[in-house]
Length: 457
Image 1 (tube, rainbow, N blue to C red):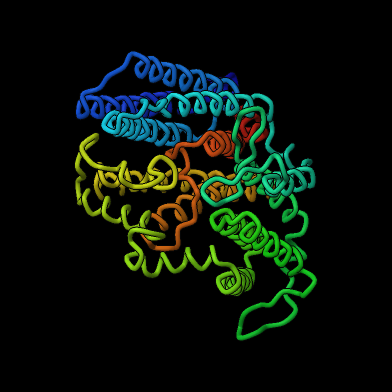
Image 2: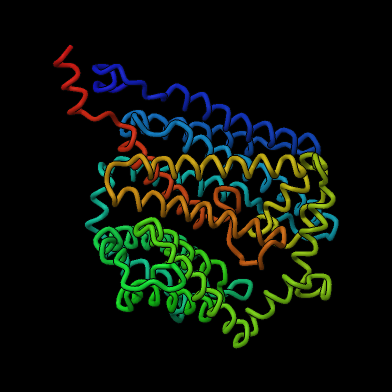
């Protein structure tokens, strides 16, 4: 406990966080053991990796005690629990791929789970680095325009020749020095910082209402400019990079932050209208958008072609039923991209509806704690920054799971902390570090009030 906590007898709840963190690690280990038991496989490297992950989580917890002792005690353990479950499922799919390769007489593929654990380690190191280097989240406001410029560059970096790489029909990755990275994941964080800093300085002018239309306040035409610009950029991402998911996430993020900054429903209506109009014209003009919507509406019309992914996902969820087939006893490998886009379908098959609902509740808790930190923080920039980063996690989860369950069209995003992918995992731990820093500021006792109370006593 810190000196301030000891002096004013304020509970930091770090022991509760430690208990939850140990529980998160044990959850992942238990899932790993069940996979090995069901598939009849075991490796020394797997246990070494699990122990290494646990040690890194404890080191990160120690940094939290040192740097942000008043931070929310639930945010970090929930994220680690999701990460550990994702590792167990990636390990299970690695085993299935090895069995398939052996049956086909092909060389045994390199397990992806060890690379994912490496990315987890990198993410945790960045998480700790941000907590140590960013002593006050309000300093990020000075980087408003720098973050915006950087975010735009990162967003369109894959379009550059010799650097950008097309994978699965989308140009989202860059290939440098033998490494493949998705810069759009980091762009989300940079653009959230930009939106927060920009809206803090313009929130009053954006809140002004000139006219009433059908009982709804309509903003001035010149104030609609930032929204239109964001709409254009989102459409450019959709058209040039063929990335429906990032386009939807990017635009939805700005609409949410704009509504929180101004408390005007008119912005939501205008934004929704722009999204609908842009989506309609994109559907008419671009074949890849039209295919996504056609597969969403009629997946079984081309079940062995364009609809194969979503059809296999639905079959997997149906096979899982209420309580699932059990770890290692289903056939999640039959779903294409089961480690990335469709990992929630794989988990739904082996854990069932009950397990999938439990995972959704974990995401709901993570979003709720992030929103609580946003509401409790004492400065407008921290409020917008935290609500923006929380929106990124929540909206991305909704977009992915909505696509897997055919609630909305497939988008190609990864599930935060669960899916295989280094870019996404590193970006999510970066988001987590900023949320933890903001929550520490929100929960830290007011030193002036505490000193006054101490003087009275």
